[in-house]
Length: 286
Image (tube, rainbow, N blue to C red):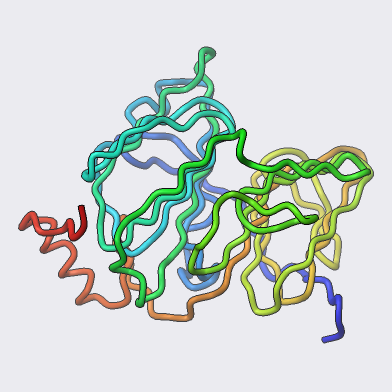
């Protein structure tokens, strides 16, 4: 490949309605099919509702091990608590990047805003074997700390993780070197962004319509675009704008043993984790 080779589209998907937690209605963007396809990412859920009955039951106490969960809010709020005694609330524009590591038991309870609106995303990122049993940690980022890059054509980019146009996002020191951008591209505009060779790169459209990849395929709200390898991504718009998440990370390339909220490298490690849950020895730190 020559330098500045734009990424084409490898696969496209549509999100799927799903019930999770105690009965939360959401749309799953990735997390079905081949678990290696988006390595190091495992799952992306889009929870968007104006009806509190579709989300108030929330996600009561449940365990995680071996992964990171990244929650990004657009509207409403989520109250959370965990087995280490942490408590907090994330609201519109905030991000919680939780590294479950060796194990944590937590709950996430959506509350919505004053109009009953709830809108956000949760991404799961895998951890390599060398870090699966690390001490849990949080990076909780308020909206005011997230840089906003505005380009001359009106493109607006919130930089959660990674660097764009010299602005570095506040989430740092993540093992898989991820980038997480919220990009709003106005009508009749173009967006290009360099991407490291060999990294997994995908986009999730959640507003409008855009033309994605070297072949400029037209994709709309609810679409997931997995790109081929290359040096950059290209997106353009014509009659209307588009807003999408652009996410990338370094593949781990290890076996995946996944059951529910726990992701390890082998079935034996999974059995051990669930045995420890039963015995009350799951929590290793704190």
